Every structure is written in C-alpha cells, then in structure tokens.
Length: 451
Image (cartoon, rainbow, N blue to C red):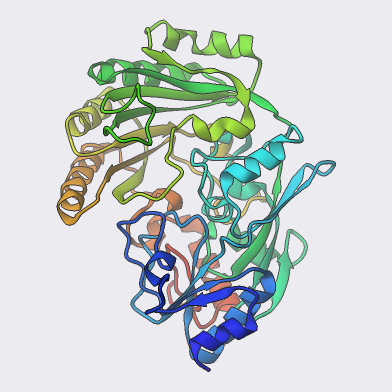
C-alpha cells in the first residue's frame, strides 16, 4: 500500500515529500534540526495511531515522535521512518476529586497548567510553556517542585499505549506493570504513548520569580546562590543562570540587548516565609526582582523561555558538584561568547530518593544539572555556538559526573550514559518484549540487540 493511502485509514492527515506543507510538517521545535522522515502523520486519535503502527508493520517502517518537538536533534533518520506529530491529540481532562489529569499525546505544558489551575491544582511543570507534556514527563521531568515531589515521570499514574503489534493497551501498576515501569523515564522507546494520567497537587499558588543583576556581578551572585542553596528546604527549587540577550522583538523592551546573571526560585509556602527565605538574595540588590506569590499555572513565565520555534544548538550535563572553581570556569567561558544562556539547576531532595514504586528513572543522584545553548540561524553561527558549548562544558569537566539527563541531552550519545546503569538491561528486555523489531524510535533510542 502506498503511504499516501494511509490517510484513507485515518481521521488525521498524511503529508508527503513534495506536498506544499512538507517543509513545515517535518520541522522540529529546534529549527536547526533537519528531520528527514518518509512521511509525516498527524493522528487525531488513538485509533489513528493504531492504524499507523499497523502500516509500519506492513512496510517495515520505523516510527518517531514529535509533540512539542523539543529535543528532536538526536533522532536517527538513517532508516525509513514515519514521523508521528501528535499535536492534534491535545485533549486534557481534569479529575478534580481524584486530583489527576488525563493528557493526550500532543498536549502542551501551558494548557495543562491552566486547566489544572482552574481547580486550584498543579502538575509538576517545567520551565517551558510549549514543551509536550508527554515527552517532558516520559523523559524524566525537572519541575519547579522537584525537590518536594520528585521527578515528573514518577507522578505518572497510568498510560494508554499502542504496542508494536498494534494493540491499544492501558498500563499502570497492576496492568502491564513492566511496560508502565519502562515508559517512566524511558521516553518513547517501547511503545507509542497516546495518553497519560498524571498526579495533580493542591497547590494553587507559589512564591516564585526571578532576580536579575548586571552580568558583571556573575561570579559574585552565582557564588552567593551556591552558598544560599545549602540553607533552603526541599520545598524550594532554584537555579543560577546567565543570559546574553539579543535585541529582538520577542523579548521585553527593558531586557533587549542586555546581559544578566539571575537567580530563579520557587518556594511552596506562604509569602512571608518565602520572603524570609530569599532575603539573603534580595540583600544583594537585584536590578529586577519579580519574586512574589503567583498562580502555579503561571510558573512557565519565570524562566522566560520562548513559546515559539528557534534555531539553536546546546547541551546539558549532570554535575557531581559546583565549587567556586566551577563557577569561575563557566563565567569565563560564557561572558562575551556567542552563547545565549547557561543555567545550573539545583536538584537533590525528593529527586534523589529511590522508591520501588518509581519507574525506570528512579532518581537522579547528582545535585546539579547544567544546560547551555546559543542561537544558530546559519552554519557560521552554528559552528561558533558549538565551539563555545564545548569550551563551557570542558570548563565544567572536573565536576562532570559522566551522566546525562535525557531531556537536556541535545545530541546523539551512548544511551548507557542517559538511562540508569542498574536498569539498562531491564529496559532492553522490555524493548525486546514490546518492540521486537525496533519499530519505535525515541530521540535517545535503545535497540533490543543491545545489552
């Protein structure tokens, strides 16, 4: 059967090379990524996903996934692959009494946060408003409440999936428990996830925001932040960050073309307790201070991430420590470079606690994760950014744990550095059981042949 005929089986659409919308259809969120599928499928239901999987079985094709389209750079297009773009599957259902949300595969972060917030509930949202909820959660999920409630992948209560033989199944702790374990931190490696159910939390408001100082104070402020986090409770998550902002219209006018060092924080508690907690930072005299009580549904605004696609290049690593020498290194490598952003997130707390109830990504042992990127609108800019990313990560080399966090790993790498060592063989067994022909191609893919 011709690929175009798949459209006759679907409520959704199929876009092929040569179609007017082809170049737009195959785009990732990162416009510097060149996705090269044989066709792009826009399913509108789980039944459409089943039909696509059955076609892939007939044709010997692989299936890759985009929802928000973030972190698509590592996808391997060397074999014939269908790209499943799930953006039309964006329904969100809130069970207020059960404090849970059912989220389809294409739902984005901000709509879920708003839908939960209408009922004074929150999910474990990250910093980006338009990241796909499924990709974020299946890959781990570093939220603003991670030190209190742990990784977002372990707040998944159930999942609806299509297996490689075309079965639509529900997985939870009691039904298909091994499949349920594998998706929580394993990304899209073992099945096509069409919906998940997430735990929600009765936290309608949070004390959060950002403080900004001129970039010239970067070393001072980042060292002060590093000392401060030794005093905070698990109810507080924060990051130290540097920004070198271009003069572009999507930024607020007072920020355009300027460079800053920032501390961003979120505290689960009262305004008075939050103000007391951040007072040592306020004593440093920030030029801009937005830290205040806010609805948890607005948390994605704190990091000021753009909510539209951009061309960029970057990379992230998990750090074993962040001493003053490491801060000196990143400040020296960043300031005046072509990089736009570098951040160090404080982890620990509940994120480092293991539990038999958790999934594949049980915990993150490292206390910090670093991520940096720069805009790359053309080949020359891309090369310059890549060189500087390497220099900055090299500066952190003595404190590099050798481990990587899936959603911040922007390039192809050995999956053994991403998935927990103690669980890697079990993940491969799950892959062999549920996807014996390696149909499903995650951004950080494993193969049933690996061990």
